[in-house]
Amino acid sequence: MAGVLKTFLVEPFIPHPANTEYYICINSDRDGDNILFTHEGGIEVGDVDAKALKLQVKVNDTFPTPASIQTTLLTHVPEAKHDVLVDFIARLYAVYIDLHFTYLEINPLVVLDPTPEHPAQVYYLDLAAKVDQTAEFEAGPKWAFARAPQNIGLVTAGAQGVDAGPPMDFPAPFGRELTKEEAYVQELDSKTGASLKLTILNKDGRIWTMVAGGGASVVYR
Image (tube, rainbow, N blue to C red):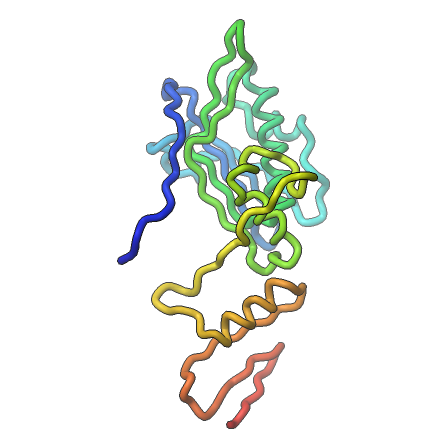
């Protein structure tokens, strides 16, 4: 891998004991969305699939209630942290849906113990996520809003009086760059709910295959 590092993420150090680290992941499959949570997080989180408590939101289900989040996911969490975690998980899932994520993982999710001066506080120290590129025509403006440095931390995408950031840039598959024709079709695809795809396997070839629906058309030039 070669190139120049141009972007760095710097975040404040949050001192915390190991027992305040949690793990949360939201992912999607053909049946709906799955919210996984464990009361142990960090670098030694272990086998998440085996140990995580799971709340499934099926395709036609309503938004999970605070009670369902609390009773399903927080059974091993101190009760003093339930309210702040229920609120955080509910809002996190709302953002997941609104911005068309397909995967979102926070590890560790740190929840500091409440004190007489402060309620329990939430910090997400490491996050990995994937968004659905086919939703760019609908969610693209919201992604651009979230990418503006001055908007980080704002909850409402598209709020009045704020500028959008750069559009989401989806790189080409590893090892190749888009041709100008492929880039043009990708730009068209980002502006419509239809699916427009173009991959040129051999720009000097004499036979082009266009896959459409259940069959294929062969174009000679």
